[in-house]
Image (cartoon, rainbow, N blue to C red):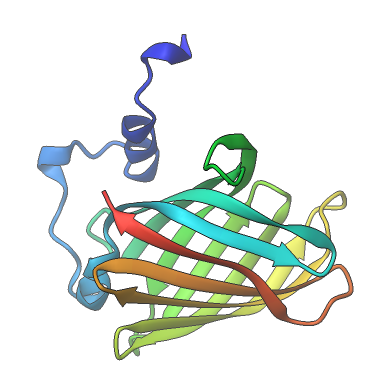
Length: 182
C-alpha cells in the first residue's frame, strides 16, 4: 500500500542506507566546502531543447553523506502544467559526488533513461562547475554526448543550469531550476 509511505522518508532511507539519523557520522573534512549542499532541496524549473517542446518541472534533490569524502545524490522530477499540477514523472538520476586529493570534484551519475556519466569540476567562490568526462549509454537510450552544469547559492536557494549535447545537437541549454532547502 503506497498510501502510507512517506516519500521523504523513503528517499532519505535510499540515500543513506543502514545509517539511523542519530548515528550519522561526522562530515569528512574534505566535504566541508560542500556542506551547504547537504539535505533535501525542492523547487521548480524550466526545460527545453531543439528536439523537444519547452516544459516546466518540479524537482527534488537529496544530498547526504556517510562519513567518507563522498556525497550521495538522488534527483527525481515531475513534468508540470502551467498551474503547477503534476502531469507525469520526469527524469531521475542518482550517484556520488567525490572530492579528489586536490579538492576537485568527480561525479558519477546513472540516469533512469539508460545513460551514465562521469563529470569533473570544482567548487570556487561558491559556484560548482562540472563538465562531462565520459558518457555511456544502453542500446535503447537516446544519444547524449556531453554536458555542462553550474550550481550556486543565491539568497539561500540552490540554482543550477544544465547544458547538454544530445541526439545530434551541439552543447546548449536544457534545464535550469531554483530549489529551496526543506
